[in-house]
Length: 338
Image (cartoon, rainbow, N blue to C red):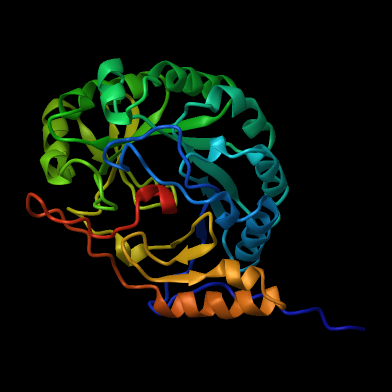
């Protein structure tokens, strides 16, 4: 009787953190140009440098075999990639077979078109970026007048049975005053909402310091308005949640600047070109595309992933401490999907 092949070893970094969450970018392209994320005239990658859907699928299966139980598809905007839904369907077949959750983050502009297909493929919840419900401010921030399409997409996702969590970047002097109303609206629609501090990634036209809004101050203001109770809920990411008695909903806080959360990091990110970034706030990367296209992909991927685990840093070093400070990293958020 033959001996069964040993299961691949789980991915564990040098700080004994087990990696169970993969954020896989399928494209760096986006149909919006959010001012805090990228310049108006953003230069996207040549298509020849981007992994094929087959390569993305193979990478995802490799991570699942090594213990990744949650997979989030990101961009750029993932739904602008042609035939993206085919990848979702293929990965959906792994649910219950190593994969516990398949989800994605989207700006919502094409969600109305794909919501039913996503639900049919096994996606149960999604994150939608929404910084404002004011149409003029949305156009100012995103440099596109797309708020109606985004709201239509959110409604379509709800109708398809998807749980929607809204992600809102808190921006001083822009959407700051709107945050309580946005939270109340989201909860009234049955959606959770997470506030995020702006992250200093990539050169943009403005100065991020001008609009950096620490979430500890936002939380104090909200606590003066509502009853906030710390929640034990976890979504697998860095958000920490409170329940709000008056709205009946849940509010998350992602605080890369005012509240470091790296001690429990369980995540890695792979770009659309196959670069494995061990930390959103670090330059360190390992080339999985070269491994995929080598003469022995399985062996090369094993070596590359072992190297990544040995190099994953203990924490990031994000800071926005003065006007005119350069970004922490030259890499734009759209390259690694947040």
